[in-house]
Image (tube, rainbow, N blue to C red; front, side):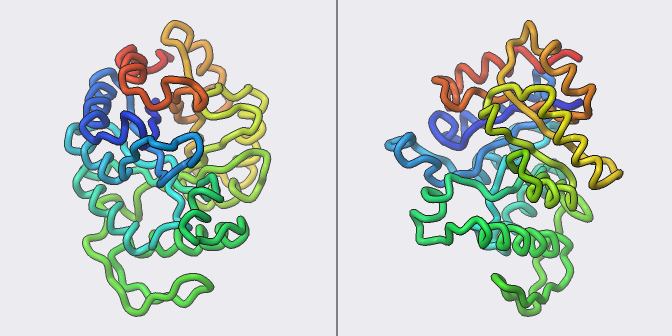
Amino acid sequence: MRFSVNIPNFGDFADARKVARLAVAAEEAGWDGLFVWDHVVHDKTARQGVPFGDPWMLLTAAALATSRIRIGTLVTPVARRRPEQLARQVATLDALSGGRVVFGTGLGGPVADEYGSFGGPTDPRVLAERLDEGLELVSRYWSGEPVDHDGAHYQVRDVTLLPATVQQPRPPVWVGGFWPHRRPFQRAARWDGAVPLFAEAGHGVVPPLALARGVIAYLRSLRDAPFEVVLGGATDPGTAADVVGPLAEVGTTWWDERQLQGGPDLDRVDAVLRRVEAGPPGL
């Protein structure tokens, strides 16, 4: 099992210098990854007056300050971005970091705030179509080969985006979704990893073992190839191994340390830094 730190792109973490400071601390303490949210406004009511940072700029600061840890977004909603621009941002960061980028994706939300506020589509079926079509396009752009495409949502005429990503055939693609909905995990099984979320265990809550076992069994039924399964929550350093160990035994490959979404420390660098400096669970 590997271990990552998960932070939002707002509050204290809107400041790229603070993200870089946290990334250095994570690398020095033995963590394996740093993942950043990708939101524009998140929840407009809850985040009113809160500063936001662009996730790719934040990750650039993290990349420049470190040399080992993986970096990426959890998750980027492809459906509200232009695939060509997104592909170039990721390829640039992959080159800058020496091939350390993980690309996490999903529908994103809250849909009314993140999409509807800007006149975008809010029908989940349309967003899912745009995600699938856009993600395929992004992957093709990363190859550095010519792309022609005539789809339901995107059209491309003889475009080659260079340079290709350092990682080939592409950076790892992890797909997030809420279990027990099946379609997000059918999508994830076509790529490189899954980031399950649970209504019964909100962001920062350690998922019950039965839920973890269920989603992992379903993913294994879809594919036999090596596959990342990313679960997360907030742990105490003294008991983290006891909490995370059983999840590793059922097939979780990454533990993603997260603050409680409704808690006071979600976007506070000092609180997150204290947990990071204590180190990952010692399994």
